[in-house]
Image (cartoon, rainbow, N blue to C red; front, top):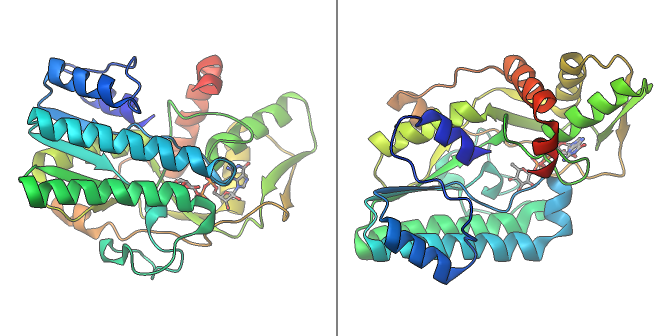
Length: 295
Ligand code: GFB
């Protein structure tokens, strides 16, 4: 999802976007980077998923992400890549971080257990960028996006993030004329969502204007409860039944809103509000259902 948005944003530029490489394979990555000699790498590739996928497959989330990061970052160093941008995530901040979360909160207290494996891997990625900058002078930077959504997202009832999962459920409920829509957890957790094309704009902005070891938060600042979000999604999809909350499912972190004032002050602001973004995401889902479910 993020990679495609960056490619959309950079249309017309000389972009290498080779989906055949298994980034977990060290040799393939090294050969590809040596042969293609990119000037810049945006490391958007990762094993990602929603709260259930993270809890069900911690080994995959840890292994795949560690392999992707170490292979790409080291290969970039060996090939003398001029700039590399690594993507962390707001969920790598401590579970009880003071809100809104500033970049300084990293590694100050324990992580949220439902995504600990993913968070540990992503923290390692940030630290790799920092270490290659310190030891070898590489211009490798990192950013922390909040929860993302939009075209190219993976739509799956079980393993998706909340927006695509609820969108699919609401769509199916509407088509089948069902009376209820199941929402996991209490509906009380608060989340901050950013439309993926706004993130792509921020990434290009950082590539052009930022060079420091400290990661940069990129969020919308727009916080919403899961209950309200579910209602908005039902509205966008046109599902008119009732929301039913399943308290047997986990809530995860109760709140994770980031302080994005550093990038805001530097000049980047999001342009797509949640209501509009949900509409666009649903349109994309309707016209790409096959691709959306295979992503
Ligand atoms: O998007 P989500 O899976 O990830 O869930 P996290 C957000 C909230 O939505 C949780 C609730 O409180 C879920 O219980 N929710 C309600 C649902 N209905 C659903 C549903 O049908 N599907 C899903 N998936 N959730 C992830 C991390 O945490 O955040 C990842 O696990 C990743 O590592 C991502 O970084 C950004 O926000 O809880």
